[in-house]
Every structure is written in C-alpha cells, then in structure tokens.
Image (cartoon, rainbow, N blue to C red; front, side):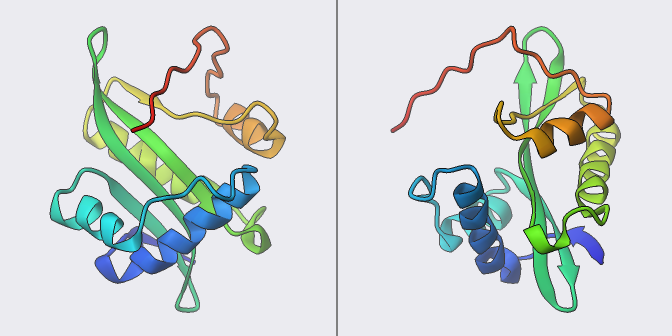
Length: 146
C-alpha cells in the first residue's frame, strides 16, 4: 500500500470512490461533482488537496482536505472526506491516511483540524475516538446549497 499525493490521472478513481462514499452514507444521488471539476479544484486552482492510497496499481482510498480560517484560532485544516474501500478496511490504511493529514496540519502550523462524521457511523466514530478526537455535539451544522 502506498499513500501518496493525488495526481491529475487519479481524479476518475477519486470520483468513483466519492460515489462509493455517498452510497455508504445513504446519499447515492447527492454527488454532482465531476472528475473535470476535481482536476480544476485540486490541480489548477488548488482549492483543495488530496492523498490517495494505491494498491497494485488501483486507487483504493483517498483523503481530501483544504485550508480554512477561524477568527478565534487562525488558520485551520478541514478534512472533507477520508474513505477506504470496504475490502481494504481494518488494515490500517485509514490510519495511514489520517496520519498524513495530521502531518500536513502540523507542518502547516494550523491551529485546528476539523471534520464531520455522521452520528450513526459507529466505525468512523470509534476510529476518531481512538485518535483522541473531540467529537463535539454542542455545535449545529448550518448549510446552504446553491
């Protein structure tokens, strides 16, 4: 297993994994992003960044993140998605991806790293608890779609 930064030729595979994640999260029709948009956002404008996990020439997992800002804390990192295909879970791959993102956060000297996890996703909740994450139920998510 090789964890490496994503490259433009990975975007179709990443897009496929995004659809798998949407199915897992019970929102199969929610993805409107495209591979072309991913190329533009990841590599042309660098609005976000990604690591992939490569196994025998196939992309089997990814983590996508971007930088934000908190008026209270300063620069932050937001982990948008971390996903590993089901057949490869429980092999430490998710931990490797998470560790890569944490390293980026530390190297970039961000003050906080954030992400969301669905309240029914017990495997993910257990994973983040194992990593000493604070799972905060005090804040309510706000969202607008355009």
